[in-house]
Length: 197
Image 1 (spheres, rainbow, N blue to C red):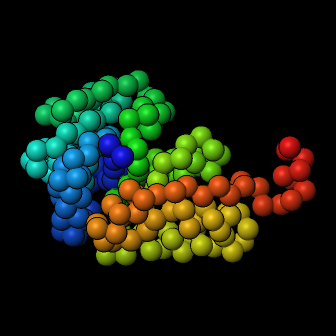
Image 2 (cartoon, rainbow, N blue to C red):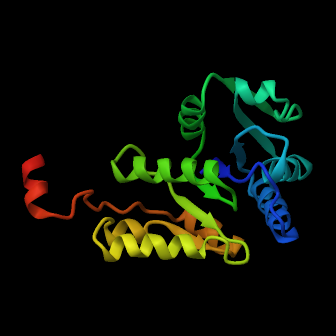
């Protein structure tokens, strides 16, 4: 593992704990000699995690659509800033650059990015670890919803167990380094699986 993609809010949220965890994660990424890959912004938790990486002597690569550059939210002091044409290009490029994905608290964009990576992995388009780094139980309701997907047979239990959720940085980094992807079928119905063979 050489790089970690962090998805997080372009706002900082209403609790100091969100910024504190973003700073702690950025510092830890640098200490682990890993490169940060993120959305290239200088605002919210995005800016905080990038600044923490850089201040700790690490490298940070930002990938940002031209529209957001036009809105003047691009971080200009990164190790590298890549400007792309669309959000779709951004996600694909971040996938190419990163070896793992971690979500800090955020909004629609954060969930969109992480769930696309989870979907790609479910379809066999990637074998990279995905984790939700929690802060004051921000993601607990989401995990309840994901557990409901398993209960209602919309999601394979192995795919649920393949997703890390927690708040401890030591545990997170150990899990990512030892990660072995699950190989569960996308379709749980035996008849449907046979039809696809």
